[in-house]
Image (cartoon, rainbow, N blue to C red; front, side):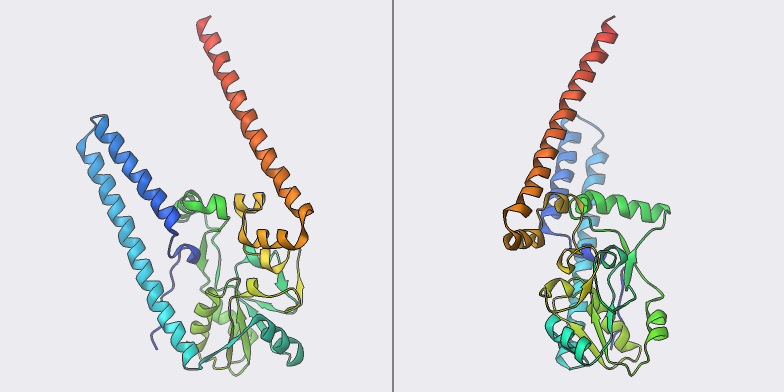
Length: 286
């Protein structure tokens, strides 16, 4: 079996959403139009077009890599090399058969909520390096939607296999889970290629677990461990809307109050900026 090709960038951004891709193309088109209308150097527009082409090539390569990876993962499941469990079945296996659960989520998700008694070894984790390349990725990730989704910049954990081998023998029955079910499949492929043959994958990830499927710990519900950013602050994620439908108006009022607060703060900043502008003009006039 072909070995897993693991990117160092955030796996959540392997295939950017159409929204962010369209936004980037509109920004690029606007830059080109502005350069043309101002009569600037023609080479600027050509460089922008080249940058757009490079970005599209990267997106295309990432989509091809993901399609190839999903084909391999489907093969693992179809051939029975990795067994499929629902979150409820995983809960039964943990409680009744004492099977271990390997949590491969990054620390940004694990720290919010986890399955009681689970073992944590991230296959990707938050990239805290401060070198130029990492900072550039962080800025790009933030600008391309990280500010809204709260998705951190991740890098592959090169110690993943060695850490798992320290904790579990190759013959162990091992339930592997992440937040949404994608990174855990990547982890299953790595583990299978390393000699683990009794692997169980939690379909849909921990996010799809019902309230009574798993015994959990942490400050937040397991379903909300994968959200963040400004969308979480405003309560505009699918997970929070589902939670609001269960908890009623009290839950909705909290986030409605936050939205009103954001609008008032933005208005206050605008008024303050206008007043500062008038003050600076008055100083110049004197």
